[in-house]
Image 1: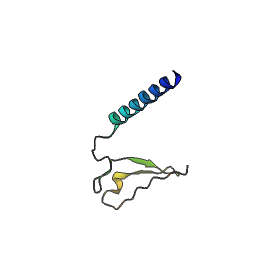
Image 2: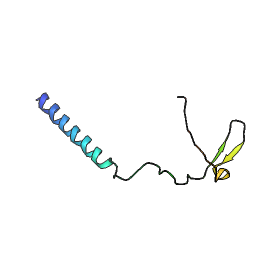
Image 3: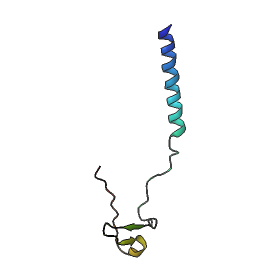
Image 4: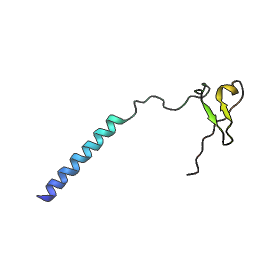
Length: 70
C-alpha cells in the first residue's frame, strides 16, 4: 500500500514539475542585448564621490564592465 501511494506521489510531482517548466519557459524571443543599440542612460558615483553620466560620454567609445568579487 505504501509503495503504491509513494509511486503515485512521484508521478504526480513529476507531472507538476513538467507543467511548471512548460508554463514558465521563454517564448523564444531574443532576451540578449543587441549590439550597436544605445545603452539606457544612467549615472554612477565613483569611490571618490565624482559623478559620471553616460550621456557625457556620447560619441566616445565606451566599454562598460560590471564585476563582483564574491
